[in-house]
Image (cartoon, rainbow, N blue to C red):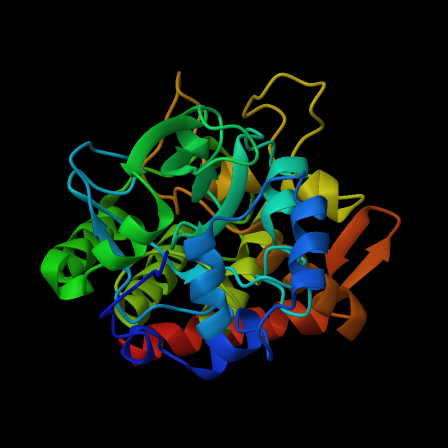
Length: 343
């Protein structure tokens, strides 16, 4: 049976440099490649419509990337958004068997093994789209579902099949909330309450930087003006924020490894008394929440920052654990001053 009849396949994709480098496999999948990918995915047979799509264009970033929803999710009350559809292959990081392919989310992030995670979202891993084989078995026709990592992996139906999902995608202008999102994000970074971790750090560095809290708000505000929302990636101001957060954190904490800095050991109960990067700026405890935070993050960005800073000598191992060098702290203060001057 033919799939996507009358569908504008050529006009569906946005072949930006990012899409070509992260998602788009250079060649259509061969039968041998399809078979090996399906085996690596756990024996799930990919839908014929999926194979039809990737045969014409093997993965990528859709130009239409929003899907209307009848049920609310962590993303929005009436829609979800995706950042890309995974190709069948292994040469791109976001392909089904790439570095951040389907099994990565199951094995490393503990997403439920219900099928194939074929599309990610702007939340950087905190909600995903999956082909759900629970009702049809590994060789049947899966539905499309939304899986919410922040909501204890809640599963919400999206579309009856993959083709219905793809043909149902609409332009973001249908659900354009960017201006309100920007206003809300600015209110958060200007007035939101800080985590106990940051509040303690501000007290510790008061003699060196008495307006440390104001400096953090100004930097966060600059990030919101750049992006329209508060999130940290690999851009220059995000890097400055990573530097600043690490300097604040080490004002009263010892850091012996990146893993310990990012997140306290799993065997310990989550507590602000045992702080980490996540509790400083990303997530809050239910019993004692805070407002000033990103609400989600991609660990890979933070790890890349750490590796680059250690490699460049900005962060060095000392008798007191990893610390920023004096030269790096001077550069940090200069960067914060530049942000203030840009206002």
